[in-house]
Amino acid sequence: MRQRAISAAVLVPVLLIVLAVGGVVLAVAVALVTTLAALEVFRLLRAAGYEPFAALGTTLALVIVLDTAFPEVLEGSGLLLVAVGIILAAVASFTKIDPRDGLQAWMTTVFGALYVSLLAFLIRIGQVAPALPADSPLNAVGAERGWVLLLVLAVWSYDTGAYLVGKNFGRTKFLTHISPSKTIEGLVGGVVATTVVVAIMLWGLGQNPLHALALGPLTALAAQAGDLAESVIKRAAGAKDSGTLIPGHGGMLDRVDSFVFAAPVVTLYVLALIR
Image 1 (cartoon, rainbow, N blue to C red):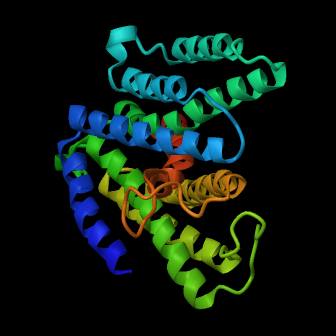
Image 2 (cartoon, rainbow, N blue to C red):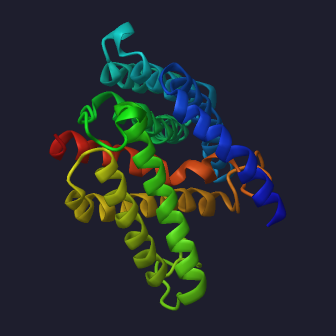
């Protein structure tokens, strides 16, 4: 617990500084986090018995994130980059003597790359979210920082609410074959906490807080799904954590697994329904 507290005391201020600066600094931070998460996920896949092309997959994930951060370079050709990555992974698989080995190497390389590259939506939401009304309480923060902050606080609130309620009131287990500590009570607590925080942030951003009735639960459930998805990979690999990078917290992927699914869900909702 002491290690967790020390790590949090160091990491949280760094994250807040990155959010405060935004722009290129945010893009570089997401690119670094994605690279570290990719290295961890490919290490887990190897421990699970697969043989992905880790260098190729990590490069693909990084390029997708950089393309999102600087869309003017290739005019936002994310889908084209994905296609090129799939082709390169397929060509690399030709080096495997057994076609079954080639197939699993091809599939796991593409999977690992696309999985962690979903973190690019941490950048994307700031690019596509609507401008803030002049009279919004958080207008001085700016649209990019404000919407990214909403996403970050929403995921944090889910993790905190689910942990506190689950620890103190959790009785009903679910999906124990993936994560034995998860409870329905914790899930409900996390959903409520996320909905409240999202409502406050929407108000601060000059939006209708009633959107939180949908966006809050969607974000919470996506965050929980992201956590469980990483647990599937770790269980297949026989690992407790994705790595040892952050003392008391595990690896980088352990810290951002909820964002992997929550970021695209929040971005899609904002694009489709927020004006």
